[in-house]
Image 1: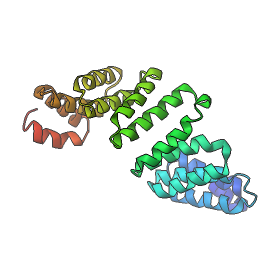
Image 2: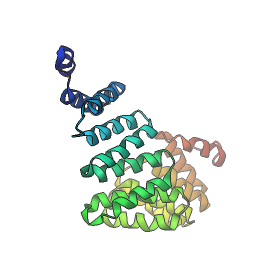
Image 3: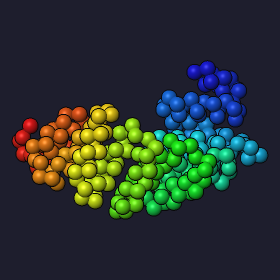
Image 4: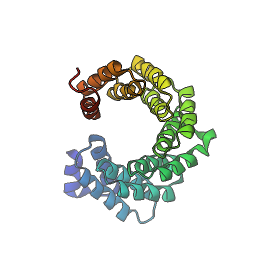
Length: 239
């Protein structure tokens, strides 16, 4: 409110619009107005002193608005403008590429990040491995995906999402017992609706109908919508 009052009183400049735009991102409110803030900053930054940051922030805003093509364009512009934010922009662009279903482009971005592995902290490297593995799974490269998710889990052992992804990869490779073990591990860390669903899929392939239906029912009760249709087809009226 104070920023809006200051700007309305004639204090509109790059700094006030830049700051107000960031506040809107943090609060995830008035995002269309945040776009206008960063448009103003980009227009007024005639010396290109900070354009890379403005592009990045506008890209973040577009992503929150689910305008992924626009977000991708801005992250690319940030990469071209600001060498200090290359890794951060590549990471964000890779995630957007995945959301757009362009998994090959996402993998290319992950590979550029990993090419500077000596500069990457181990936990961040694990996250990159995880995301690249997920994209590889989407393109039916399950064996390559397994190698990468194993590297992730060598670094981080307490991330439920990583155990679930490896379980999904094991299912793709028809290693159903291993998938069940990974979901058991995931659920020992924290409850996850997706974990119950994935374990149900593995149990289904193993012919363990009772266990599969129990997990599907649990997933559905926790709000995992895909479980409902699967229950109807596989379990009938069983609860």
